[in-house]
Each structure stands twice: as structure tokens, then as C-alpha cells.
Length: 463
Picture (cartoon, rainbow, N blue to C red):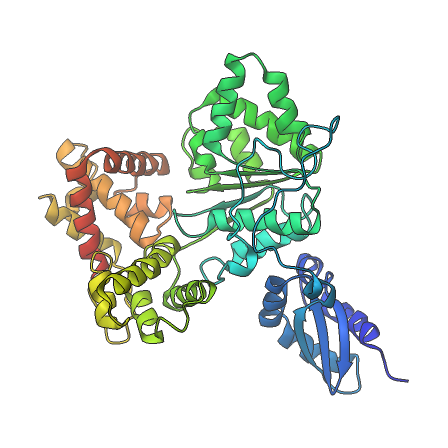
């Protein structure tokens, strides 16, 4: 008597446990159900499209190999969205659950009315996975499948515009789709700070504590690096974190840097931020940028409008962030409409002249500049020597360009704080953090300073 699909999958799952980490099996394979077995093919149903694509790329080959141990002949294992999920309508927009009836607990029924709204576009199906964000995407999906149990808290960090907020909100969308009654709060750290101040002034802290510690199941806080140096707010956040964590409520945080790299953040908060999973998102490579642009064009039904060679051209020349890549598509379409011209590489070069970097080698692939090159360019533009930037001297003539070189090393090369410190005379990470903050602050308030730094960045990016 032949095995059924369910029996085959059960045996195959036991084999997978011997080859894969238990966490991987629990997160990705246990939620899978057998759909069918025919013609040497085992079809498995995943809870959503993201999980189906992830399992197909990461686990299908291994499972196919292992299948020969549980069946008379090896099977081809494939994944798709499970039948039950496929029949369910997909959330193309976010609709808050109905308001609670009279007498219901504040914030019950899904999304409290004091929380920030979720962006309907920030879902897992719309997130393009590549080498630079693969780990963060996997961790986010694992949290969405088992909130409060897998990684708590989940701390996602990286430069602006690379998808941290997208992943954070995708978690909320996925959880609310499966559990509409989940009381979910998405806020910025700035809003949390303002709430603390307002409730202290109005002497309503008990209500504040109830909202943040008792009346929610999922807390998502964007840009927690803004908590730095705010002692009273950090005190409140510490107790809020403890109350939620002890109650098994899921916490998701984002920042532009890792917990240990946030200056002025209390050690006890750093420790708690690292309790669960800390993952980073980096800059996308050429293939990833191309995929992002194609996804954007497909989602906006523009894939027949923008030729592949134009998408490739943009991907080769715009490398700063996902947000800027998507903005290029919008700007290009507007430019073509105003000029009444067909979209070509020449039009793209004209429309995006402020973003296009000088061409590199023949295949469009450019390696980032070295730290030596960063120091050389900055030193020349500020009238000092590379040796001076690496020296222990602290004169203002050297301090400013040294801080700028550190900033560009972080921005263009993605170097860790310790690496930057070593490259500039063995300085400690706190000095590097101070330098980065100093430059970032000056960029926002000094137009001339910003133009000089931008010119240095452009020269380095065009190499």
C-alpha cells in the first residue's frame, strides 16, 4: 500500500530534523502541510507566499535529496501557498478591526486608535529579499508566524531607506491577517517620547502605563536610537519592555545602528534589546537592486512600460537606498510624460542626472572605494594629509576632515565602528560614534558643509 502525502511528509520531516537546526525546522517546515503526491512529486503547502518562496529556495533541494530515504524512489519536493491560504483574500490595504463595543478594554479589537496607521504597501509579498537583507527577512517572518515565542525582541538595524520599517510593518500585517484581534501598536520612538512628556505634565501616567503595558499584544517601535540621552523616557521604556516581555508580548524595534552603538543608551536597555535577535540590513548589490526595480515596476503595473535595459541601467548607477531606487522609477515616468518621449537609457540618463553616478568598468559592477581612498580624497579636499587623519593630533584643522572621513567610511563602505576606529589611529568606538553624530548634525544645518561632503561622496562613488 502506497504512502499518502501526509505520511510521506511526516517521515521526511523527521529526516530533515537530523540535517537542519531545530529552530529552522520549527519556523519554516513545521507550519507546512502536505497537499499532494503524484508522478514523483510531493507538493507542500506553506502558510504564505513568502514562506513558500523561502522554502523553495532554501529547503526544496535538501528535502528532495532526503526523500529517497523514506520512499522507494526519490521525489521532487516543491512548495506553494497552502490551499486554505490561497482561497483567503489577500490584504491589499489595511483595514483596522471594528472599534470595541462599549465597555470593552481600551485598545481591544486590533489597533488602538492612538497608534500610528500601518502602510498598506509594507507587506511580506512586496518585500524583495536579497543577500543584504536575507537574515532580517527570515527573522521577521519567523516572528510573524510565532509572535512572542521565536525572537523577542526582534531588533532590526541599518541605514535609512533600506527596508527596516517595511519589515516591521509586514510583521504586523501578517499577524493581523491571521489574528485580527491582536492589539497592535506601531509608533515611532519620537511619539513614545512625546507621550511620556505629555502624560507627566498632565499627571496621567497610570493611563499611559495601562495603554503601553496592559492594553496591547504587539509593540513595534521605529527609530529607537532617538531614545539616546533621554533618561526619563528610557526609564519608562525599560519598565514597558519588561512588562510586555514577561507577559509574552512581542516587541519589534528598529534603529540606524546596533544596540551597543547607540550613544547615551542605558546598559540595561542595551542588554534587553539584545535578548532576542539582532539583525542588520545592508545596501543591496546590483542583482538585488535590479530585482527591487522590477518588483516596483510590476507592482505599479509598469513592467510593460519600462524596458529591461533601462531598469538595469538604473540599478547599475543608483546605489544608495531602496527608497531612492523606487523614487527613480516615479521620477523617470513623470519626466517621460512631460517630455512626451519613449523611455530609453538616454532618457533615464537625462531624467536622473542628479542621481546617476559615473560609469565604472565594463560590466557595470564597481567595488566600493577602499578606506585608504576615502582618507586620500577627504584629505585632499580639506587641505590636509591622509597621515594627519590617522594621527593622534586633535587640532580643529584635522578633527573636522577626520570626522567626515569616518562618516563616509561608514556611509559608503559599511564599516563597523571598531574597524573605523582602527583605521584612524586606533580610536575607540565612542569617539567614532561622536564623529558620526557630529557630521550628521552638521549636514542638517550647514548648506555649505553639506555640499562639500556630497561632493566628496560623489567623487568616491564614481570611482
